[in-house]
Image (cartoon, rainbow, N blue to C red; front, top):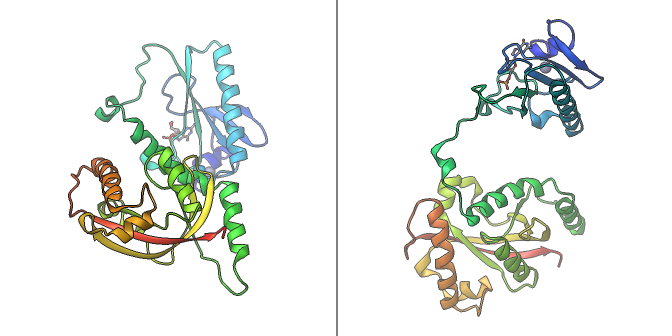
Length: 297
Ligand code: 5GP
Ligand code: ZN
């Protein structure tokens, strides 16, 4: 990259106090150190962000940072501890858009530290942690060989001439690991063919996530292991109080009665409402979805 300051350092076109170099990376002194000895580890190949960086090179950068930290500790440099820090993206404080790992020597009273918001002091509940984990697991599972393998097996099973969907979502049922496992099993067994979610949540998250007929999803258990592929058949928005016996039956939970459905879902939607700062009411709109298992079948 012509106008990248770190590429210029790699190419010797800009001065730097280099302390280590190999085929893959360069380590040099930060021009504006947090503490004396503050070093930057950068890849020789330009990558603006972590997503552009080959994970193999990322691993190599960490190894180089580990060795640099060891060197700093063994040297005469004032150092009682080390922080490794990497800013990925402007919002995370990245100023130079060529990936770099900071190696910062620390000592007590050096005046450097992290700022925490007030939110930090209110620890989230176990359910909230599970919800966070579930959201991020969806990002992992899309890269997971098991999910991809199930998806490939599904597309290979399609009759000749049928074009596989361009994309798919990966998700699990409910808001706890246990629910994800139990409801996932009901789907696999063909008992559960309907589900519902709170319309208000899509208003918070963005309407593009709203399910629609023809959507295809890989369903996972609470650990992110793929169970099956489902296709959304129809979607209807219905107030909680107007959900009928047929829908409750298709939800497949408990004794499949409307009474059971109402009691279990009131509790569930009370939790969902809580997470977006709302109160559950009989009129709250639900996105009621019917689906069918398309693989394995
Ligand atoms: P960031 O804020 O992107 O995590 O960190 C960028 C770091 O690069 C800062 O600590 C800054 O002092 C350092 N830096 C910016 N330009 C140069 C330069 O030309 N030479 C060196 N050695 N460090 C630089
Ligand atoms: Zn660069």
